[in-house]
Length: 397
Image (cartoon, rainbow, N blue to C red):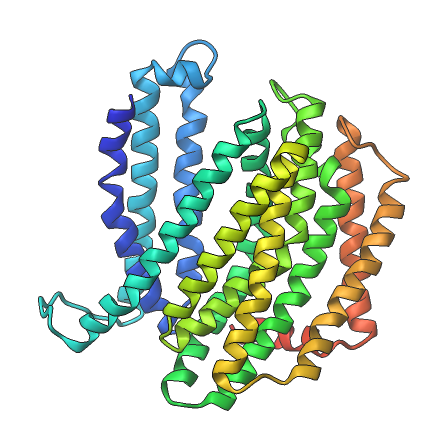
């Protein structure tokens, strides 16, 4: 069955490459809608394939059944492949509508090709370092039953606000950073980096605090069913809580790396990332024996948060520094407001619903509503400049 799936997955690789190229072209033209929508189309097709499974396969569908059933394998392979093809098609239709016309030219000695080859060498090393760390952490998580699943599920929760909020901001800022760096406007580059960092704190601080406060009822409401017990949900929730501690640092780290890339510098990100992964592995080995999956999440949070500080310092030195005091105040304000929001959410949500069962939905719903109203209300009441900037950016895009 693995061989059959590989026959579906391997042909997907060129489509991923074409999608990445198309997204880059659209981002350079400030066309962000299609790149945001295309993955949704992919997910909808994959979900449709999963929903179709019970209608074409008899009996319970679990991992053992999937491994021995050709119909399940074919449906999964076809669903994922069609999803990738649809995503690629959506992106390239948008490229055509944007008036971008390209054609293949096999000029391997062109200066642009050489520059891409030079820059991508360090990037390949970056990816390899990440994969080695992921492999080591996965092996460590296997020491206790259920901890790898908890870690993987918690990581999906962790990636959700980053993908929805941080990536959206970073995608918007990346072309501006590259344009300013390309024309030598370092002052403009520094201004955009500073604004991007402040806006990241504005949107990611409440997400991190919200996760920390509502982790148990949130995870219970979404995954505590079937073979997943209350203990499994609690383990996953504690892992989510530790991941949340590194959410802001993780997003800042990746944004600062985009700052390096705008300067056509992939060497420094490689070395910083290598150190980050080494620290993650060392801490994971130290933490896993006592805390299991939550300890692995803690090592991830600490490693990325420290790497964010190092990356910022290195980039600041490279471009002559940032506006330290305004930047610090702009990032501290939303963090302080988010902490206050978290205390209010904790006090309110604790009085309604429950951590498990049907009451978990009530607790999460009340907590989210109170948190949004409190946080947005505080931003408006205090007239936080970054909130005004975010609203202007949203309207402009």
